[in-house]
Length: 65
Image (cartoon, rainbow, N blue to C red; front, side, top):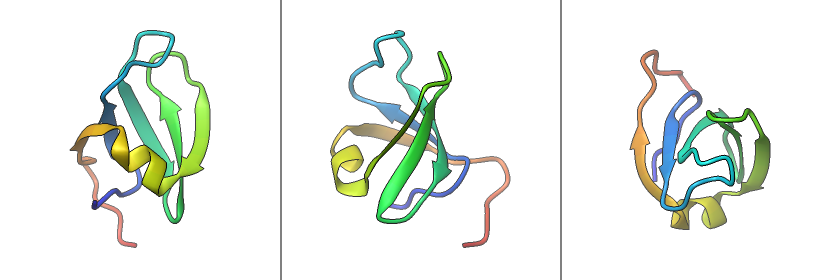
């Protein structure tokens, strides 16, 4: 799955605050994401997060990684 910095991930289940969208802050073997509802940040292994992603909204400015 192609996930880049500043992409928005729409998850299958909502965060306890009710928001399903997360902003990607760091990529690699682990992803660091921030909830767009409450601002909570989580760092988790890529393979665990990829199972829970419904869709990826690409960022306006594509980063060159």
